[in-house]
Image 1 (cartoon, rainbow, N blue to C red):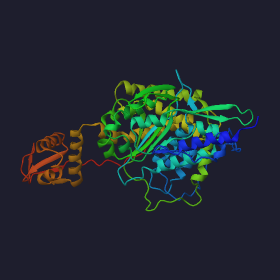
Image 2 (cartoon, rainbow, N blue to C red; image 1 turned 135 degrees about the vertical axis):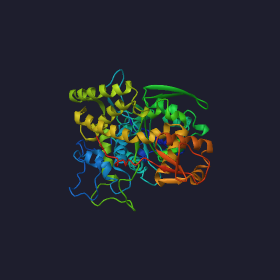
Image 3 (cartoon, rainbow, N blue to C red; image 1 turned 90 degrees about the vertical axis):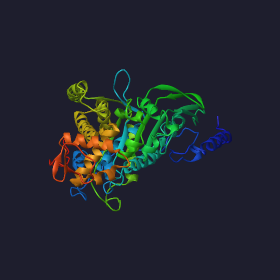
Image 4 (cartoon, helix red, strand yellow; image 1 turned 90 degrees about the horizontal axis):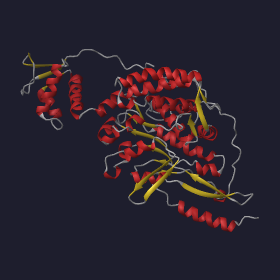
Amino acid sequence: MPLDFDKVLSVMQKEESQESNETPGLRRPRKRHISDSFIATTFEELGTAPPKAFKEPKEKPYTPDEIDKLFEENPSFVTDFMNLGRAVESPSLFLVWGALWTISSALNRNAWLNWYPRPMYPNIYVIFVANAGVCKKSTPLEIGSALLMESQQNRLSNLDEFANEYRIITSKSSPEGLFLMLKPEEKSFLDPKSVAPISVTHDSKVAICISELATFLGKQQYNTGLINLLTDLYDCKDEDAEVTRSRGMEKLTNIYVTLAGAITPTGLRESVPEEALSGGFLSRTIPVYQETPSKIYSRPQRLTGYPQISDIAPKLAWIANNCRGEYTFSPEAEEAFDKWYRGWKAQIISDALLEHESRKDVHIRKVSMLLRVADYSESHVIEKKHFMLAEKLVSFTLRRANKVIAEVTTSEFIRQLESVEEFIQKRHTVSRKELVSRFSRNIRVDELNLMLTQLKQAEIIRITLDKQELNAPSSVGRELYSYSSHEILPPEEVVF
């Protein structure tokens, strides 16, 4: 029976009209030719041989840091991603986690870790934290989203292209707006041989990629409940439903959400609602913090002879098309994980860890799987080396983030006390007049006196007036506060 192409074209044009009014902030891949839209089509052979990672020259045109050295012996998608940002002021640590988030998004719930009672999916939430202008926080996001969009052009068929279309949220969204992005969508294709309809569903899958995370997670009224929603979505339920004010009951299917965002420590502290710092959201995220730049370039560039986006995108497509199904830990990897887990669990029981470390075991499991996938291997067995590398990377990342997380979760009084201490430390000695002038807008005089008293009692500062040492602050402007701790801490070292 021949196809009625007039009828097919009519349906296609109706669909095209509906898709022309896209939701702002949602990035979709470029569409193929309209004649392919509703006829089931297998695209040209993409090749099934695993790609090979780019191998850098022995004499590198940059100075490797500790993270570079950690990965240099094992070229993979992670190093391919890092090579795209070698001459950009984005730390290698940021690029590594950008690569892992990109793989996590590309897998799109088509791969999972053997777990009980239900599969563990490798979706991750990553937050890049650095002071404004210090490091390029948004670079990993830009590279990752560009790779996802370009790799989408290398799907196995238009059915697969629709079912696994990357829907990337790049701007602020309310809970209802997020539900709209997650709403399952069904489309019918025509089998050109039997003319039978083939129904395909794009499930509740979204990649959130936000360069201004403070705005996305902000305290605006319309954002109420967004943190709780993201916390719930992290678990990748097979089915879920929520009630919205405008559309009633919203059903979600085969949920898969990844998140990557950039924010400053101040933005994390001042713009993010309290619910984000408790209730489980923080423990589900991986905060990646960089205090100082690891490289400086006045002009970002691509190193000569190094790969570019168009070189790496087909490799990501190979991962998306071929790394599907169940992954398992090898016996050796499981034994090593069990040994690590028992020591870590003892720390949990003794309450010796911060909240963002309470799901460290889950992070390590997921990252181990992502590192296996990054190897461009058809093997679905996670080896001991993947676990060991994942444990080192996750432990180092969470340990480095302790400082900024502690600042975010402490009280306002403690934060102001630390600010006063830091001010005195940097100047060695300051007068009361200078100190009151500096903090008069934020700290009352009675609170300042209490802070100075605490610092004095802790022997952090000395208080003198006319060369006479005092035990407590007075109200005299010429009173001096001197930093008395002369211990010089060594620069932060990377210890795995």
